[in-house]
Length: 191
Image (cartoon, rainbow, N blue to C red; front, top):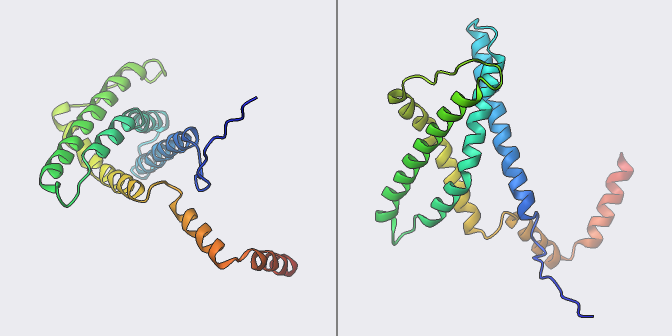
């Protein structure tokens, strides 16, 4: 019987499935935070009974972004801005922002129109798209900028587990295992 050894990076924190679960949870959290902001704004302005519609809108927007995130990730990684290509990649990155924003806004419009009646919210009017696209683009610029910065940071440092890699290497070089055991005993005895 032949035993195959799987090469495992000892510094990898999570699997690909776990990372996509975290992405899903991140988009869900973003949807709930946007919902909270909009719904509390409604209550502050004395606009009651908007809970279901606001929750629907914000979660729909978050999950539309989630559906487009693999495409966004692929495009951002292919249009990476460097010293030697910035003059080509900056306009291409801005074009990527615009295309993804149009796709996201269109996806939200179609899915809200089709899903609102299914959830018992009646017909959905997304408003005049001539104004809706620039309105959504303004919000997307901020989100895209944070996402691109995060993607560049993770790509530059290899894996998302780079802080753990550094601490493990420092820990090993200093040979602090005995210190850790003593520290944990001292700490637990003070509690």
